[in-house]
Each structure stands twice: as structure tokens, then as C-alpha cells.
Length: 313
Image 1 (cartoon, rainbow, N blue to C red):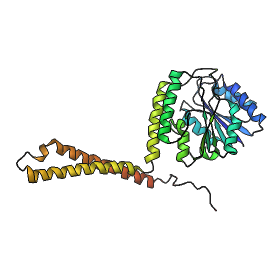
Image 2 (cartoon, rainbow, N blue to C red):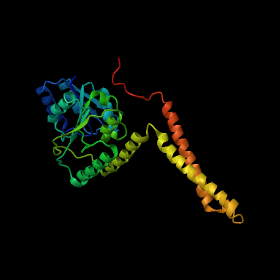
Image 3 (cartoon, rainbow, N blue to C red):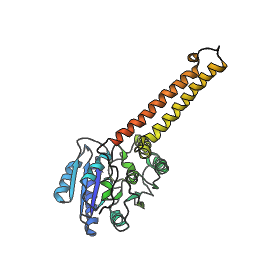
């Protein structure tokens, strides 16, 4: 199969028939073998009924319905698991992503050998206050933190080589950072393509200000995990050792000061600096042990992948 189109959705009943017909037209005009996988993320409107009608009309349509709203990341994860195409295309269901971009995205993956192509909605039709300005701030922070030079991390229109989606785990709200997850998994040929952004035709946006803050929290998480997730001792061990030795040498200083310079002064335990030194040693020991335990867990996790083989003979 050439292409799997994965479309997560929440209450987009009005746009689904038009989106389906548009995708089918593009696929047929280019003679692609394809499948369309709709993932209904707990819709409360008629979205699921429409998906079932589309499946009866077109055998390439497949549907996944969640019991309740689990979020876009879980929807994409479910779609990636089911996808069979050589190239995986993801897009939103609100008709703001154009299926006419599919042939060029497919060509970039197949002919130019990219692992991942991310869409860039350079000209947007969203509210500047609600989405444009927060998106610019978010993307700048993501570029700086991750080292992946993309202008629009959160664009729903992306194309992937099949091996990419089968080797990454999208969880929580990490759908924004799939290019970063791909890079961490060893897929380094990541590109970007300017795509057409269209004004919303039906329904209302699902974007809220809480997603802006959640995005930055997730960015911190993925930066931490990508930098120290495989070597927790490098962070906790270093900090722990540093704090322990500060406390330890401070305690030695207090002892030498008491024995040789201020023998008649008050007891060491009556000096506040003693408790600061003691606290530093305790915290340092705890941090060191946290890093040590983290290393033990990593080395004894039988389900982890130590490496990925590119070729063997």
C-alpha cells in the first residue's frame, strides 16, 4: 500500500464527508493505493455514524472509536499501530489541511528519502491572539530546546516513512513533538514543506489557552528525557555528588574551626551553618541514590530497546 492517511477527530461531523471526497479524489487521480483511518476521539456528535457510512461507501475507509476523549496523541498512536502504508500522512479533520499537498509530501518521502516531512503553515487564518502569537513563542522555544529546526512543530499535516511511526511511542500530549521523538529514535533526515492553511469552514476550534501551557510543560519533559532519560546518573549523580561534597567540606571546616580556633565558642550543633551542611549532605546522598536506582531500573528493564539495527547479514 502506498499511503495511509490518519485523521484524528473530535466532533467534526460536518467536515468529514467533504474531507473524505477530497482525499479520495487526490488518491484516485494519482493512482495511489491507500487507506483512510479515522480515529474518533470520543465525539459527542454524529461523527462516528458518518464514518461508518463512509466505510460502506468506500472500502479503503477504516475507523477507530475511543470510549471517551483520550487526546490527540493517543489517537495518533492508535492510527500508527494500524497503518499499513509505506508513507503515513497525518492531517486534521477540520478541512484546514489541504489533501492536495499529499502527492508532494509522498514524493519527498519516497524519492527524496526523507524520514519525516512536517508542514509549515506560513500564512495562517487563525486568531493572532489565541493561536498565532502563542504558536510563534512555542515554536521558538521548541527549536532552541530540541535542536530540530522546524518553524511549525504543531502542524497536523505531516508525512512519515513507515519505519518512523512504528519505532516511536506517542503518549501524553507528545504529538506536538513527534519530530523530536523521531530524532531521538535515530531518524535524522527531517524536512519541512510550506503548506496551504485554510480558514475553518465548520465548527469551532478546540484550541484553548491551557494547551499553550501544557505544550511548554511537555517541552520541558521531552528535553529532560531526551537529555538524561538514558543516563539518569549523569544528572542526579552529578548534582548529588556536588551537594554532598559541599556539605561534607563545610562540616570539616566547622570541625577544624572548633578544634583549633574557637575552642571556647558555642557548640557546633548550635551554629545554623552546621544544619545547612548536614542538609546538603542528606540531599546529595538522596540525589545520588535516585540516579543510581534509575540506572539499575534501566539496566533491568527487559522490554527496553538497547539499539536499532539498520542492516544485518
